[in-house]
Length: 228
Image (cartoon, rainbow, N blue to C red; front, side):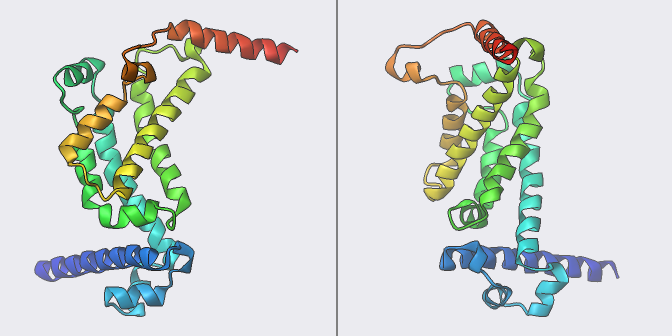
């Protein structure tokens, strides 16, 4: 009896994987997720419509379940990176090594690249990238606040974290769009460095400034504006 259940589970996993890949291929073929049909996906996957409907209600449900599962899987890796101390990151930069956990995240993305690229591309789900950013923000924000008096930095912290995560997700999308030509180890090092590089660093003219004072100036400006 147990072996029968395992066989059924494996068959279900294979079926869902085939439908996931077929969806991605149909997005590539049509150039637009909204034009993808159940018939086209099932024919490409080699399964019946009845089988499709035993797993999903419709194409939007298929997309949502794929995204939900992917975000849950990737969040584990993002949380591992977020758990790193600044000292560990500084040591990684000094030794030209990737941030702890970053290669694991990129490997997970690479393994899912066959469907992530179409889904996150121009013809895919435009909301998916935003969901990816929100997942990363939620996974990181608690750890990022450790040691920071958010009352002192005010809105600066929220916008900084939003900016940093949007930038990293943008780099990830660029990697996917480019066919993941760079190796995982190389890309992990690149993304680690990008978390800390400043525009002036590229030209040998680093720009240093007092972030708490700058954040306070923004806060004072906002308060003055509200008084008017």
